[in-house]
Length: 381
Image 1: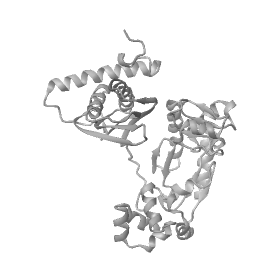
Image 2 (image 1 turned 120 degrees about the vertical axis):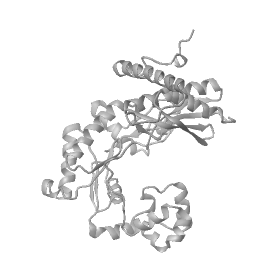
Image 3 (image 1 turned 60 degrees about the vertical axis):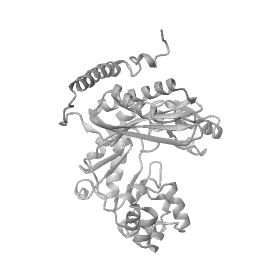
Image 4 (image 1 turned 90 degrees about the vertical axis):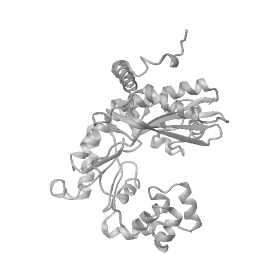
């Protein structure tokens, strides 16, 4: 999708159309979640601090995010795409792969299918998207980014070799800052340059990614459309209005993020068996710590207890500017699990889960902040 969150806000509020809009918090410490294309003309992009975005565009409009609304539109869009092929893999809230081999007799050529998908999405949700078509998966992803917004790019089989030869290496998915430093040292500027090196050299320099880079440089991508994709993690983080250091304030922020993660976990009917925290310090350095659990949990209280235990093990020497909590090793809640040997702990865990489910039900009707932990309330006695 094109500037998904910002595009939804512009669609729903005519006053925002054709104006520079970002979706974000409004504090100096907030970062840009999504920027409209009008805002991007000023050099504003995702993850940029809001204060920098304001410096680039004095008349910038900041809109708070509404994930419930974005998820609802995402669901409609994915339902539309799945009508064209059952082989669809959703990889994020606004992006999916679809295998259209064998669909030509029903819907026409690859370009016809792409135009039909674009037209149907626009007619149903009034949003534009950009589509990339290619014989292999990773090139389809790259093609989808080439002519945004409202683009359609088709890399045909006969064009693959030349396209790969000239493709800037930084455009290849998975190439991060550290890998780029090595690329510069080796004077690798395009994906085609990878072919100058043997597999042993690439493996030594890039680890497991070395083999994949060699395959991609030869037009080979063994990855397939994964229709059984399941979410691997759920997390929530917040950039704080000001740096904090005292333990009680840190504890409050951990609790708040744990509540958010637990609510999301239960909404998806999942449990987790691993909890992690993320702390970013005043100098922008950051650390993560994780904890593997003996049994699966889904209650916010249990997540908070595990996250807090991780924090207590860290010797803080610098102030904190960002706090995050997350969970991995996700399972369907209805999947069979081994019972805890300590039945009292098991009973206590279920009691907290019952409380959370009741609070979730109230929050669903009246909003997420109608019921909250007493320690998170500003009004204390």
